[in-house]
Image (cartoon, rainbow, N blue to C red):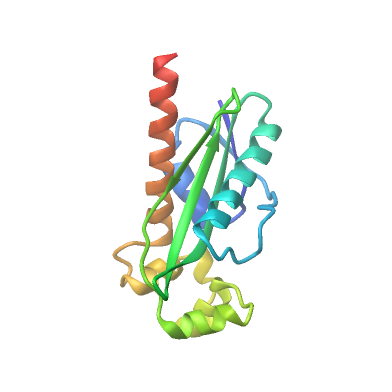
Length: 169
């Protein structure tokens, strides 16, 4: 079965390939239809669903996956958040979220200026392509959890939900 993934980001693709190794995976660039830096759980989830729906439409009977990273506020602290969505051949939407950790205030200050987290993290960590490598989660967990492992966890949650429903049918 073909699985369309709404990203060209190598970290997100590696996570999908790890979990869905038995599928033909096709990477496509699709719009999240949300802001480039989602600022809530709701917006981040919506972005993942929008990507998955576009991918499912392209797949013509296959699966579509969308992954979105964002930030969210909890009691005056800013947290990293991430969401994934899977749309199956019957247009059923499955969603899952993963790890959340608080971000330092100086990160929040930069995000408020309209700078995307990936760009903020490059300056903060003095590294290039953080969003395509360890991600903010990797930097702030000393790579105990990387962006790939974080998204792989979300994808496992999606695949598990899909398989339970498929096996009941």
